[in-house]
Length: 282
Image (cartoon, rainbow, N blue to C red; front, side):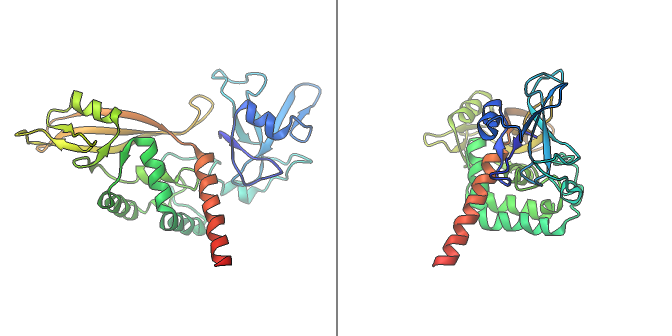
């Protein structure tokens, strides 16, 4: 995993970097311990609050040399006791690709995902829009919601509150880009590579005059799990032009999207806290 937490705020994920770890733990003995053979570095998992150990913090232990954390699987005296039930339900324990479709054992988590989408759809959408570079119209969002519901994306272990925007996107099918507003990077690629489409003055995707016979669609593909070799989780955002006969197609644009799990989860939880405050005092 590429996040951690501390005893001060055990449920608040922090992006795992050397600087963040040293700053949050102050390199104190609670977290950093010398057993006479090596210095071992510990923290908490923000999802299940079990102890985790850092790999490649000071001395590289793997070929990739990327800093990451993994569950210890046992208690760390003075830091945290290992809770096997919480560990087995943890989204960072044996994470799965979005195409795995393993049903979640804890049914309450299903409602948690559905409620997160219902109450904070704007946050999910705005996170995707910023990462991708397109603006979703209401009708497009409706179609994506229908896809997610039909695929029952909220029922699977692979989708959780740390990766919800990208899990939601992956569980949707290809959607039409005609009329959708795109950023300058995507616009340039469409102008360069598309046979039947261009981008207008205000960023909207348009058909070229007198050219028909193809559709321009976007979809999400190729979920890669973060590990010691690849770092953060990623999916690909793909724009493809497809002949209406479906006999020919070509990729216009591809962008790899990394998940900022800590940012999304912390923003989501803050909005939940603000909602609770409003309910309590208004």
